[in-house]
Image (cartoon, rainbow, N blue to C red):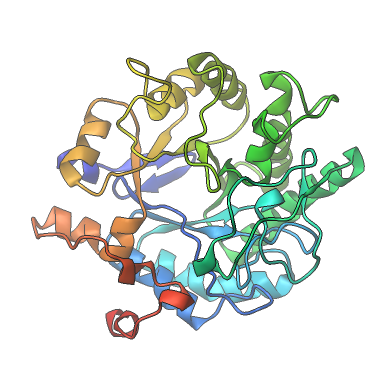
Length: 363
């Protein structure tokens, strides 16, 4: 498994191995989004367990429309940033980098303490019901279309949140452009029916992602890591695929490759399967080919042999794991020592509604 334990580089940072904790919705903060001691313990144990980097749950970047879930962590205020500081210090003290994933819920919002209004590129209602384990029930409301002025406010929310991440000591930020949240809603023709510069062609629909990327980079400078997460599948539609297949992928990834991002993080149901139909490239292969940036592969890579093979075949540069990290927070150490791995089960999800006392014992 030596491929998994070679050092790697993202931007100006060295990672001790190729294992990264992928972002997972936690809904474990205080009601106002302030991270707490439970979250501190949750993140610290991954660093102790040998992961090279820990990407946070999607945290909301502003106090307007961005919060997606009740008890979702925030990085929108000075209070939020101050509460993240000791968590980041702990993770970094154990040799891991810590990256804040900045996420605007868009139409997939099911709990916001600031407003009952949801927003999207165009009027849109997600096709599935809200998620009960994340304090939701019933259908989503219809989101209203953002005006150009409101789009500017969204961008400034991401910028301010990235500045707060820098203030809190994070190693970098990751923009959540995947899984059907706001940035991904701009990318998708299903939710984006705009006729201005942000709608229509694929090049126009990827425009907001590029603009947010460049404005965030200008705000944080060149030392912090800046990445972006991309997927085809949505939280409310796991079967969605880009209608143009590899042609769409070439445009999207080539346009993102022109920006100052340091990495692309691919979210897929299985990182090793064809992304656009039988005989096509995987999503990670497409991202590497068309961006020439480091790529994090995420999706069914709990098997170390399978994960190592993705790296060996140069389909990706790093491996993101989520459920396996929950099942065994010290997965990298176990793999390196040749120890057996736990398998994921429902108890390991560890959101408050699935909370078990075993979690405290693992701390």
